Image (cartoon, rainbow, N blue to C red; front, side, top):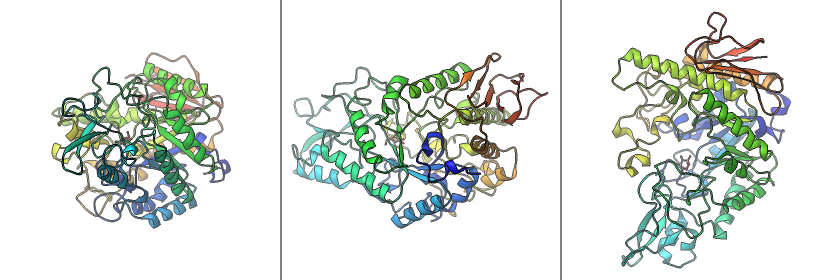
Length: 541
Ligand code: GLC
């Protein structure tokens, strides 16, 4: 299936790729501890090859006390024993490359773990020391320094500052943590911080990694003087003028990062760029900054043609304006899975058939949107489990482990519902994910219907739809050319054409609608009386 241009010799692979996000804790557990691991990823490379993806992105696998499930790194140049070791990592790269699958991994430059050697040294060394200057320590306000240095809140809830005890036991300075207290923010004005990141990048690039996903790529630089937030921030959200994020100095950092990457031809970075304005987004993907920006436009749009069309137009314009490659995704490990987002609202106590009906609509819409995103020019990111049509899971309170749940004072449930392990086979939890029935997040009793095993056998399954769509996207010449032309379409529908000739039509209404002219390549649901079914999409040429 793989064409020459897609093999490992093509340095531009990232311009038109399907990248599959592996959330390692939840993908496949070979060690039997109930948490996924790198051996599990190696074990499933055949599956990823069958799915047809070009590359994987591994969420953090470096040493971590796991306060934020790996996004709190205590040693950025080692593998956490929970996931394996460097030898297993090397084996993963080699075996993935043998299958023409590139491997990219998360880098977390905005903060470290509070268990990082640097943070221990900063605590020990005292105020004003070079060790403290690697982080953002400040004296408190108020008569006894008891008031935090400013009013910033943490993205996970609660204040963004924690006060430490100095070596002599007295209450001392405060340090900044935009996320959990276990994730102190680094001081990006200190050159040692950049030098260390460069060393980390080279460490993994020299081992053969094909690129990085840069965590909080809109972070790192803070507004000069750390001015107060004008209005209280919402948990897990921020605006573009929030002084905590998206400050101009971040672009210099990205230029430095790019300079390292440019010494390793064929590698590429994608940045997690959570900004609202497409123009702000575009700044991150200028030619000397990130190769790609992770674009949340479709993941936040809803199943609504006006919103979807605006997301596509604005994303294409933003990327096009700076000569960058557009990217698309419907979800990742931080947002509600698309099946659940698109599902009509039902209460948890609604009758089962109502709930099943809503789930069915959610799955149908997610399948339709998979065809929309895979029809678009650029690079597509698929979050593990999306290809199985998995919904979010309503976990019981006692199962929740996302720091957001505690930090928000149990007002926000957090992101665990989209991180439940993948079902591979069989009819009972843990469905082949692990030999251990006690998985790190519990798996629902009714996920036998979503297993890979079941879906591989069923030509109409969501997995089969993804496999066919990814293959067509590779082999058909109609998937070419930049931009899209919009067709006139009935209310509640949209249709666009790629320059190469592919037409994608989407019907968000509850009635069948006539299809555009052309030969059908793929439909997300069977036609109804020769028409495009409700909540479905079609590809035509
Ligand atoms: C990013 C990650 C998220 C993590 C946060 C802090 O947003 O995607 O999972 O909690 O950064 O590192």
